[in-house]
Image (cartoon, rainbow, N blue to C red; front, side):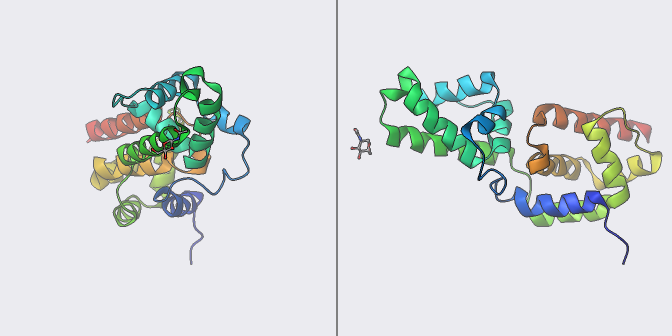
Length: 197
Ligand SMILES: *[C@@H]1O[C@H](CO)[C@@H](O)[C@H](O)[C@H]1NC(C)=O
């Protein structure tokens, strides 16, 4: 049997972890480490939503941050601010933590890739060699994608490509990647390959 490429290992790994949510790596993380996965814009936004009665929606950008950070970090940060933030401290903490879960679940739904089955079909279509090439360009646009791989990408289809990107975003290795930028790059790569045809 041929040796598996890193890309396939990465994909196999992500498929195992992406459907659930990231949880394995974050168990021992300190609050300080959790904080590093969040930026102040989204942090403030989440506190706003937690402390308001209104159905204040979390943006797509901040939803990706929450999902990438993982449920355990998200909840621990909420618990921390619920005890330190003046506005939140006056609220019933049971209600605050319930809202914490609602936010996480909504964000999980809003950023979720298609099913395992769907994704593995896409991986088979693109193959390990081209998959790796495209992944490298998604991470760093200086990389090149050959014409052959471009054709395979277009044949696989945009929906597969974007769903694979959404799944990759959920892997532990990609936790601190800017998800919106990554998706934007992904779309651009697809458009460029399609225009090549
Ligand atoms: C907080 O809310 C829960 C559920 O609504 C209630 O059972 C509990 O008594 C409340 N706690 C306080 C301190 O008001």
